[in-house]
Length: 353
Ligand code: PMP
Image (tube, rainbow, N blue to C red):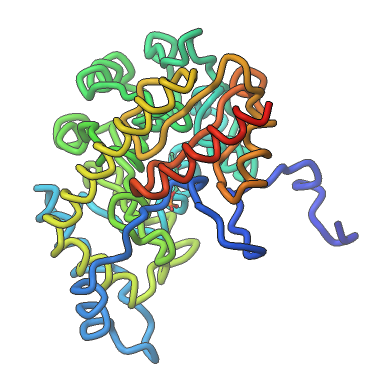
């Protein structure tokens, strides 16, 4: 730390992203990316249609928002585009969190919520998951808060049906409920339709998972026009050209390939079933994941040791050191070939013990 670093951040613990190592080729199942590349049609659409690079990108992302509005059957004033959904989450903390409206989120969830609360100095409470790692919404209801719910949750993959979130919204008229649907396309059901009925539900989604654009950084929020206007005020105060021209066009390009995206999601869901079944046969237990990852623990193998032994064999998964989940590893659902490499490595490890 330099002597100039603000004392406000002296104790800030930044988010730790999953490894992106370059020392060797890994079977990379640690950051929930898509195993499929962006569609060729989307790339050529972007090459042809991206606004000229000597100009700033469109700060309103008009065409992209129009395309998103059509896809999700809302009006464009219900949509805002962001640089990855992380930025949308940050903006939501800034726009809706305050001393009077603290943030609430589960103790086991996406690690960035705590970081955004800290850096924006928003008081927060982490609500423990139940013993079976599910979320009990009763613990969140009836307060004045900004509630962050990843749905499906990460890293458990456990999904809450939209009617439960609608019920929370009805019971919590003084709270904003931010539903982070990064993983919703792999078998969950979106809360987007609820945003048209509940003025306190904001949905955040990303192009990083089902739409293969993790490296292009594209996310978006959908909510009632009033919530979106608040977020636009924050965005214009922090980063008006937040989504670059190529990414805006690439997002439109991927929205033109929805059939391929859906087919790929179905493949991931089939592969998830295969991976889960094979892991169970090897003595693992898995949470009921509706995401593009599984969360698995072995009754005899230590979670951290397994992570390391897989890494030594060229397979990367994600291990978190929280006390209640230390025994688990989160494994991205990749292609069948990647899954078979992982399973072979696990069998090798079990044979060597
Ligand atoms: N929400 C959750 C639950 C995530 O796991 C991630 C991915 N790390 C994100 C949001 C952010 O994804 P991105 O910024 O790539 O859209």
